[in-house]
Image (cartoon, rainbow, N blue to C red; front, top):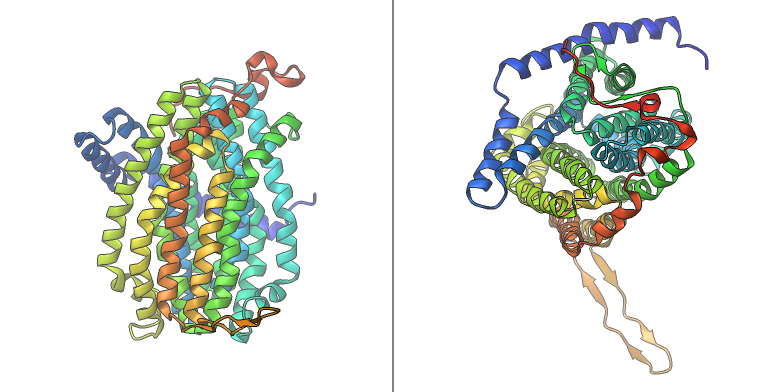
Amino acid sequence: MSPLPPSLQLLFAWVVAFIVTPARRLSRWLVDRTPNPIRLTILWLGLGLASAGLIDRRRAVKTTELAWPRVVTGIARMSKSAVDVAMVGVAVGTSAVAGVGFATPFWGLAFSLGGGVAGGTIALVSQRYGAEAYGELGRAVRSSAFLAVVSTVPLAALFWLYPEQFISILTNNEAAIAEGATYLQFIGLGIPFAALNLVGSRALVGCDDAFTAMQIRAGGALANIVLNAVFIFGLGMGVAGAALGTVLANVAVTTAFALGLVWGRFPAVGAFPVTVSPVGTYVDPGMIRDLVEIGTPVMLRNLVWTAAEFPMLGILDIFGENTVAGYVIARRIWGVMNTPGWGFGLASSSLVGQQLGKNDEREAEVYGREIIRFAVATYLVSAILVAVFAEQIVVLFAQDATSPEIPIARDLVYAACFAIIFQGVAGASAGPLDASGDTRIPFVSQFLGMFGAAIPLAYLGAAGLSVPSVTLPIVEVSTPALAIPALGLWGLYLAFVAETAIPAAINYWRFRTNKWKRISMAYRPDSEAKDKNGETAVEDSTAPTEHDDD
């Protein structure tokens, strides 16, 4: 592989030296010296639930310590996405916001594919970490990295070569196509790096260390915001600047994860919980098989969200450009509201997986049940806060307070605040299922929620439904004609609720059946003596080592 051109090498080195590393040092300094409002809020909620007898105090503290760094990461990354849209909206206008919205589902494919691989990563890593099977853990991480790369590089190539054709699938708005194609062409270059970031993050969370993953990914998100401001406002690059900032930030984050896992530490971040040798097999047939078996349903579940955006944006195009822009704004706010699920879902997967690795199924079940209660309470607080300040928040995404998309976005945010509570149940219930390898049911539930209910309701909102009378042969009996008038924006409000309420009901039912415990038996770690090719834990991956933090 040819090296990067000298100009890109210098640009990357400048980003790491003057933006990423200072941002990480600043975040570490703030964490060490100031009270953490996210951690304290989650902890207070957990202790309040413990006082009410709903969860155990020890588990509340343990869950908080693993969940809050992931919530911070989610807030940073989703805020970055929201800031992207706000910057583009202010600098370029409504057509650019719509164009970025049309390109977003294609960028989301990175997280569908990478998230699928990472779903297998956290299941395998957490169980092996709990069982102290470090040799298998190293092979799981390397195999995950291999799968992430081979599954995403073809997408990056396609988006670079044919961006206009992809955006044209969703709209015939020429201005939106031009802006969206530019954004997609550049953002596609970051897809393999985004997938590798997910693998690195899940590997650390599976090893009981969400804090280190938070520092790296949140630092990358902060660097992304700074780069976007420079490229969009300073250099006048518009949507291309927003995309380029995201790509460079993802490259820097991938580098940090890779070096940290190899060295066992990273400057300004500190010690990693494990080290993974870069020398060793990347194509372990057993690991690849397990990753595919566990990760494919996770990928398909993630793909449901992404794939649903294509028909959804096509339906929104019927409403008009203002509704498209309002929906994109509401979705960005929804993403920030949904960040507790990042923490509680992964905390549940990690803690439940570790208990399953120790063959303590009772403790695994209790962790799963209590984290569901914890997550719902946190989502409720988040929904109330956003609903109170909804109008003030959406105004930040427009050129001025009189922009026509503002009232549309505000009302969609109100609907999102109600629907997000069900997302707490759906996401936290999926955590134990993911940890055990029982990933098919969450995929089915998400598919039914999106394509069985949310998409049809959105279409009814845009166009209604008209079924003509049909005369049955032989009996000569005619069916009555059916006409459902367009529901307008109510179709979109109901779509928000359907996409979360249906998965919540199905995932919680599956968790209550306890079938996931039996399924987990197929994926629990082998003994160290069964490590393949004579490898040892020391050759492949090592346990935590004590280092002074930088």
